[in-house]
Image (cartoon, rainbow, N blue to C red; front, side, top):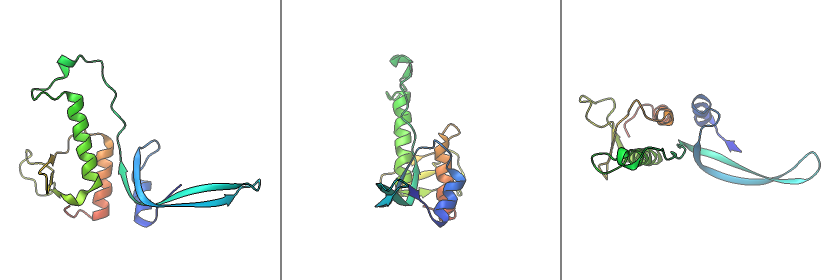
Length: 147
């Protein structure tokens, strides 16, 4: 069982939908409960402190390899996986990234940049929906402060 309190519960009710894939961080607790038949049942719950959306694995397409290669040698699926991995890294530690969304003058300037590695991320219209939902959660949690 997942337990969410206060703002975490409100944000979850607003943004989570059935069949969303998430991973959570929190405190795990186990306890024994007696059911209606008098049997002892072990129960587990997580007091959720953080939620992150995840994306399901992308299945390989039937496109021949020579058609999938990008000019840089990276195929489209690999490029997509690397970008999704970078978003997951971003959501795991958003304070390590600078947020340029509000101050962006040039559309070629990235939306986010890692403070240490210099890696960059842009929001795109074809992003998986969980990225926007997770950004909404972060924005509501941090009240639009820069990361």
